[in-house]
Length: 373
Image (tube, rainbow, N blue to C red):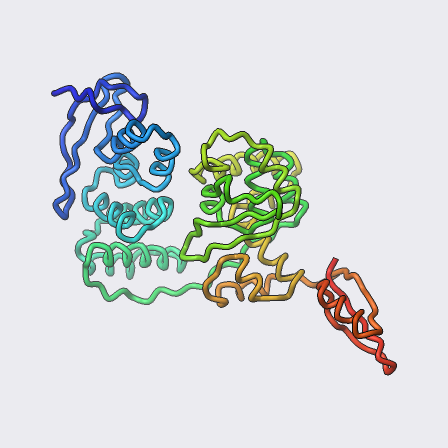
């Protein structure tokens, strides 16, 4: 094997690199593989492009940007279990469709499961037989159908997918005290991550992508500039406590406030909620996920404002239909209000501008207003 001194191992930084074969994808792209003699790590040209950018530009920030936006061949090979067809699909999903890495991993793992059942992914009829005969729940059948539909669309395979409908379960709604308990018990970075999730309603991947420049300490806002799932970018007002917690973090992640990989926060939360469920003898903690914070935020904002279009903006939804699903989750029972009375036109106008809503009026023109506490 020929030594390639101009390359560096992305794992340990060693320059003792050798050619280690090639991989040819189904559409003709040839990927050179390399191996590090120092640590034994195998990688491809796509990984080494990070080294060249860092060396040429002298900026680890640019390298970090590429790491966040690029699914490496090493990662894909692990997920795809060495299947060139699935590796081809995963690369196209990332490059052509811009799918998130977590989405790709979920779909590929499902496709791998379908393969293990004896199906040929290039023959839709074999997958149809499996979907018709396998004892799947409605949710599983819906997921398998969606994943294989994505595979066919990406690989340009004609398939008239069967209809698979199911009614999703109601999302678990924790109490604010339970969320606060998690935040209080977490380490500094995870606690701040969860606090941002609670007060912005952003998805885990969106929070992981927040940069220091997205945090406005003067106006107490956080901008979501890398929205996921086709959502809109938005700027969200947050409590001062959230800004203080963010500013107290170290800048160890470069341009990013948090670790660009949301899996870190997700795995840390899993361990934390297991411990709290035992400590507090409360199994409800185990049902809390990162996305649960988004559900809580949406229902709280609807309860407080009763403005569907405003909550639609805060969540980044392009369609208000996606926001409407939260309306039946809002609990207005036991709600407390601030009350106010307006007699003059100026008083009434001032109350409306402060967020009070009209309730009733007396014959003498006195009007009563309220807003949630």
